[in-house]
Image (tube, rainbow, N blue to C red; front, top):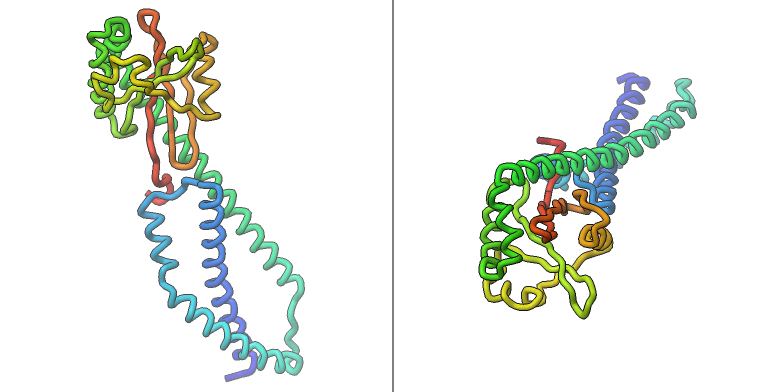
Length: 268
């Protein structure tokens, strides 16, 4: 075999190993970025495929072994380069580093874009589904307001919530949030379909306080004090929540539609 052919073969082998290891490295970078920022990009099938691909640990062993051989071949080839007139090009190396950086930044941008599209898709579906529920089952929702006025019927609220929760797969849970007074201070109360009749007849529904967080405390305060009557959407990590406000018979309450999205869109 001619020396030039050997050099080309050594270079080809090295490039194959570098590309293989680069793919694994890029996957690892994407994995770290996705988990660090809780990005929701891939569907379960795509995630399973990626994990299975990386799961072949033998690839790493083979890559390492072949890379070692390639280096030894390159050393021998380098000794022949000066004799054969071959020379390395710094321009090619710079282009290679630049291309790798572009791929890495492109991957990160792709992950963030995928996360944004996934969340937007879930948000749109959640809003559309909640609008459908409110419109289609308005008669059931209308029963909630009078139930707060007539304590004899307040036990019907969990039944309505259970009914609404079972209508659409987009959200598995519908929770009701209302307000109350504790020592003259505004507080928030919650009712779900597990709330018992006995609890509902106790003061403040048996102290069934809704524990708001930074993202929704201000919204709830604004709604129950009359500063806003708009819907509110929130998402973080795999949680999605839509706050749907109502005012009936002078009673204000919110239907909280929730969903946990374990996987993203890409790969479906």
